[in-house]
Image (cartoon, rainbow, N blue to C red; front, side, top):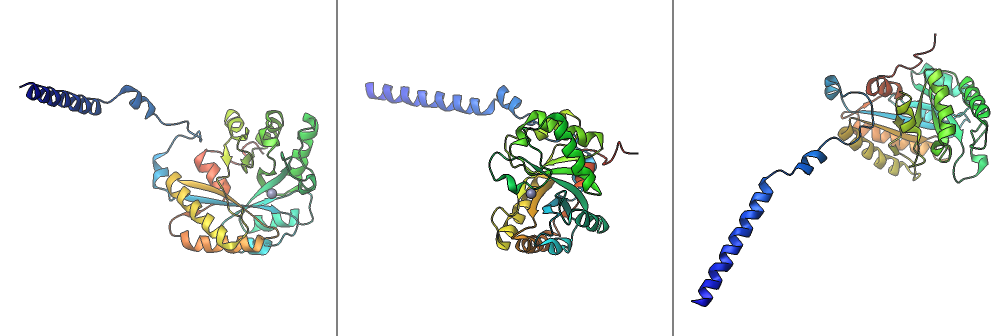
Length: 288
Ligand SMILES: [Zn+2]
């Protein structure tokens, strides 16, 4: 009898425990409902119904133009629209910017900015440093913009130190805003303040998502292009950066083969189309 009672008690306890587990699982808990709220939206534009029907889009920015770099011709011959980022004050700065514009490509000033590490000679002429006064920074940014025709914005060459500096970034973004331009954060610093400050100024917080050629081979670049496609398909768009330079031809070849594999799934656009449609920003809005 005693053992039977014990057994019944056990069965009862198990049943009660099972019932409790079932009830807990069925009742929706309040904290879960709260945490289902959307995370901080990184772009300020309200999602538009028509945007969901648009194909996913990819903006390829190619950096380091302006010095007759290896791969320049190959990049200009790519079968899709790209964005050409030109370093100021170099021998082919103006020529590369004009050529890009004539092909219908977007032009950015690829502004040299002080890195946390790295050699100062990699910066190139006209670099912005954190040791400069406000007036010096402003002068450098304006001179760079005046040197590269058709520029609709700026992105940073190196710049891991400057993009983390609120004072200097405030001046860079301020000059951009005055001229109706925007700033693309190349994202060389994960603690960059550029995106947050751009939002605060009512400017598009555009940033690079994927570097294509951190490893210099055509096959690596093609592999990175697959990641670009994945991000574009899941997040609606992707901004990616490659380079002309020592391995510029290999990067161009990798981009070309990547394009061939994804052109049916995504649309390739200039950075101007993204800032116009994603953030409702019109380039040169304040210019006459
Ligand atoms: Zn660069």
